[in-house]
Image (cartoon, rainbow, N blue to C red; front, side):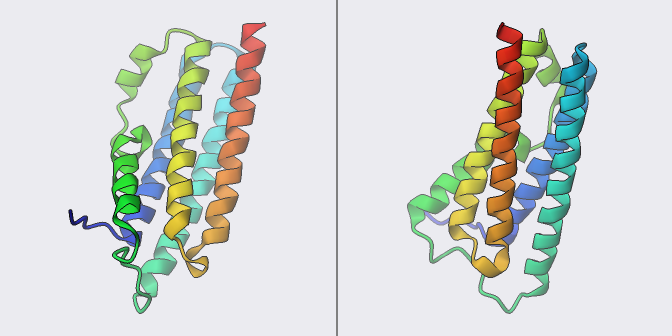
Length: 165
C-alpha cells in the first residue's frame, strides 16, 4: 500500500496539534471553576503556543532546504502506516470541535482526564515523528518538546491526584 506522506506533511500536523492544544487549554480554562486548574490551563496554553512557533520554524527550515531528501519512502511501510494511523486518530491533528469536547466535560476531573488523554496521544505522535526526523531537521528540538509534553502529564496527573483526595 502506498502512502503519500512526507516529512513536510508531518511537521504541518505537528503545528496543527500544538495550535489545537493551545485552543483546547484556553477553552478548558473557561469550563473549570477552580483557580489552580484555570492557572494551569493558561500556562499549558502558553506552552502549546511556544511549541507551535517552534514547529513552524522547523517546518520553514525544512521547506527552505528543499535540496534535502525528505520523502519518507525509505522508512519501513509499517512505520508509515502507524504514523498515518496516529495522525488520523489524534484529536489535535484535525479540526477541533470544542462544543463536542465541552459536552463530555462535566467537572474538573473530566477536564483533567481529557487533557491527559490528549497529551498522551501527542507524545506518542511526537515519538513516532522523531523516529524519521534526521538530526538536521530538528530531532533535538522534537525530543525537547516530548519532554515538555511529559511535564504536562506530570502537572495534570498531580492536579488529578489533588482532586481525588
